[in-house]
Amino acid sequence: MIIKRVLLCAVVAMFVATGVAAADPIKDQVNCYTTWDDAYLYLAFKVDCPDVQANNNKPNVDLAGDDMVEFYIETDNKHSEKITPMCFSMGVSAAGGSQFRSGTENGDWLMAPVFTFKYGATVQGTLNNPDDIDTTYNIEMAVPWGLLKTKAPSLGGMMSFNVIVRRHNDPKGFISLSPRVKSEEDAHIPANWSRLVFAAHSFGVATLNRDKILSGKYVVRATLIDGLISVKKWHQETWIAIDLPMPPGFVYEAKFVVPK
Image 1 (cartoon, helix red, strand yellow):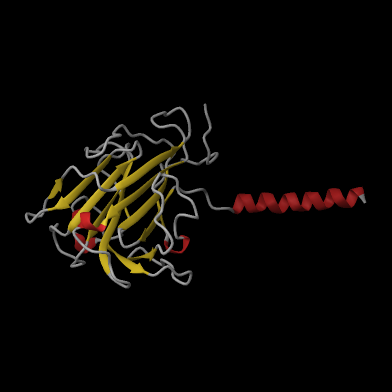
Image 2 (cartoon, rainbow, N blue to C red):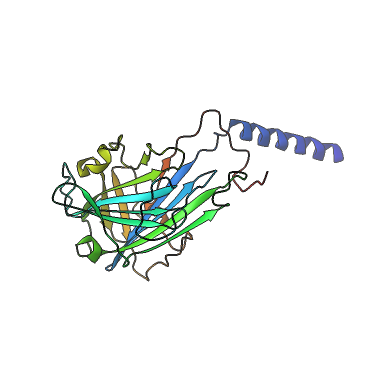
């Protein structure tokens, strides 16, 4: 009996080892969530990052050089070839800094001090410490429809929409939700953005690609914006993941904080 148990354990161990060896290497990703109600557009981002670096921790500041996430939206959904007064952008740094910009008639962005939005940021690891391995940072935002110069959308309505992730170690690069945005110039052309589709809360809907992002409506209560992402707060059916480029030859030994 003992011999049989030993053989069984050996066989199980062999299958486990084979499965681990055959598994794909761990990839960094951005998990994007969105929902809405009659008062706010809600967004959340869980960003894998082994070394979270950010210094700007106040609202209404330039976030250049920080690990950060920013979203772009064109509320009239005209897919314009340049920025218009119906275009808006909000960015939040991993350190908790934020900036809000609105479009102008000249096709430029104007950063204005705004305090009516809500946001939160948390780091799973140690901010600005290159001597450990971080796992992620989380960003949550709630932007009032009035700040976007529009009313809450109707079911089935759409707006041009994009998300950009910027990394502290690549100041000129970024990762875009929309595959049509490949350069900094592309990032400021709404015609290149994806589309945000406003749907009812339903377990039968799901985001299938990066061109149309479904946003399920909150029907119970507004989500708490504190930088902590949980399955109770965000619609799991309408999230989408974006793969992040990995440094050549980099392999994770663990996806948790490992002090050196």
